[in-house]
Structures are given as C-alpha cells and as structure tokens.
Image (cartoon, rainbow, N blue to C red; front, side, top):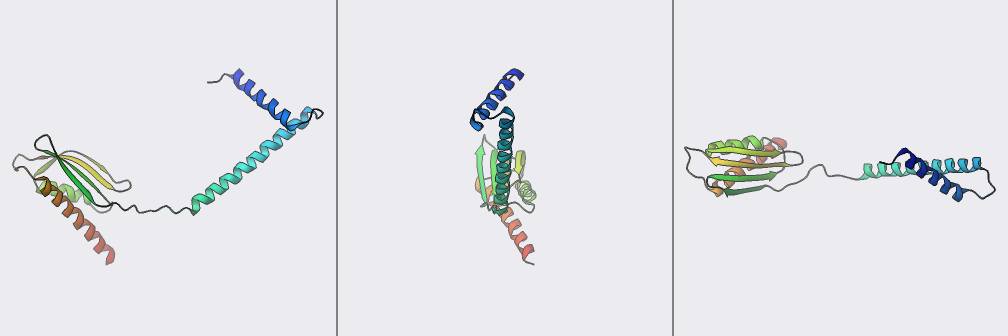
Length: 162
C-alpha cells in the first residue's frame, strides 16, 4: 500500500506534468487549474460516451438462449463392482429421476453423485452393484440410461406438440 505521503507526491507530480503540458510560461496558476479541470471534464464526457456505446453494443448482440448438447452417456468400471456413469444432455424434464429409477431397477446403488443443471444437464455418479444383484454389464447400464433419457425427451416433445 502506498502511504499518504507517496500518494500525495504522485498527485503533485501528475499536477505538475499537466501544468507543464497545458500552459505557457506566462499563464497564471489559476488558469492552469481551470485547464486541468476542463481536461478532466472532457475525459469524463468521453468515458460516458464510450460506456453508452458499450451498452448499445451489448443490447444488439444476440446471445443464444438454448445450448444444444448432444446426448452423451459413458460408463466405466472401477475397482471391482463399482462403475462411474457420466451423462450430459439438454436440460429439462425429470432426467435425474428417470436415471435413478433405472439404477434402482438394475439393482444398482448410488455411492456418490454430482449433478448440474446450470446450462445443460450433467451427472457423474459412482454406482455399486447391490448385494442381491449379479454384476451388471457396462453396456446394459449405458443402454438403460440412454433409453430412460430418450423416453423423457420424446415425452417432452409430444407434450410440446399437443
């Protein structure tokens, strides 16, 4: 942090520089202060003009409201009887509920999950095979999750059409 003395010294240097730029040797000190204030006022007006132009540009830029994400489901096997399931698709509907129902139907237990619906639906879950269930295949899990999401998306589209 600059001390008060350092800031004051820097301000005096800037004032002196502006004085030497804005006045001939014969002009009085009060005229140089007026010139400095006039210069600051002109800079302020230019800044306001640039801010208005920036706001106008922001209004005219079209930002897409819908981000299209292709449906993606990846299943990986980790340490024995556990799987990592990663899902990414457009948000909307009860996709999370459908996916959890599929896990339940397959006899899989969710050990840990992370879900985000900010710009699109994404989920990463670690699932384990239940005690009464035989080991599931990665392809079975992938197909079941894809089917659940596709049914939800087609159901939503039918609701939009009617």
